[in-house]
Image (cartoon, rainbow, N blue to C red; front, top):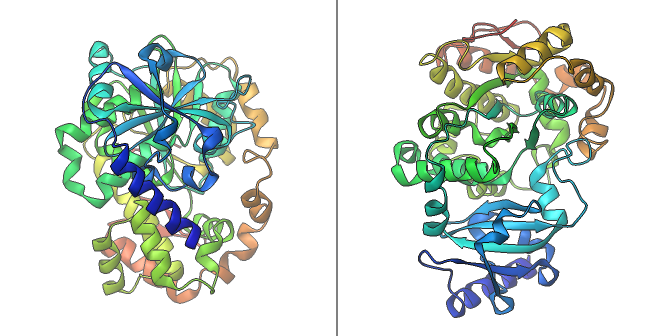
Length: 410
């Protein structure tokens, strides 16, 4: 704790001495990650002060066009890029299920570009509508990493599994929903998507984290050609998977208010929503987790009513398990990809898409056997009632399946 406060103090002091760039220029400020302490990379985009500016060196904008340079995060004042270890393919989702972690683990140099310059650089790509980009929105713990792995195995596009910069934009919108229509925020989002999809002639498939759900209301405004879809799962199985995967949810050593403060600070939820949750009795435990799934689902349901079923199809994890061939054929076609390599995609079903991580080791084989023990009857009954009364979502069956969602693909 003292080390963390010490780092923040050092960041603040050095920010005064070496302030961030405040306007467009034609140079990239670079920093060797060799001098970085790992916690500094984990403080989050809004706290990433790049406090070792005394080690700055400048490079020309050509540096950003390198194949090993990738958008790392978006801060309040700048876009930050990372040059990664030569020879490491951070987009190989079989080796790196989470792109944000791969960038942190293999970054050897960071480059900072002022916000004004970053937005100006995108101006020469005004003609692009994002038709070479596919995005699979998801609720988290619903098989999205597996689907990303399946798409990757067809070899037709670059797969970006949970790129951090999209969450940087979404977290700001979650804190301030009025930013959904804010012109500057929309410009930032467009710039993020085009920096992630660097080449107009290449196809990209993006699997964002569950915390980016607000972006479904914004992406089509800035890049109307992006092919979007939504993946979900039965509520009880997602809840139990979350319980088993994230230790902070089940530990009794961390006071609940500290967990909530961490969620607010990270941008997963707003203070106002947390206060409303407490008011209606879903502020803690499984009620909080299940209510969160419903709240995020409602965002996609509302957006789906404004679009055609082909524009925003809803896929369930259960439909993937029931008919893998039909599922992969449809999702490949939806993303403008060929289906002749679908057999390669199906190989992912027999392997661990999360690289035998702590999450996957804990969860594997335990969901159904733990469901009733983890989701108590009181929580289940309350969420079933709220699903219908508050969200207009009908929940059926012992595993709490959402059955009346729009645009459902079967």
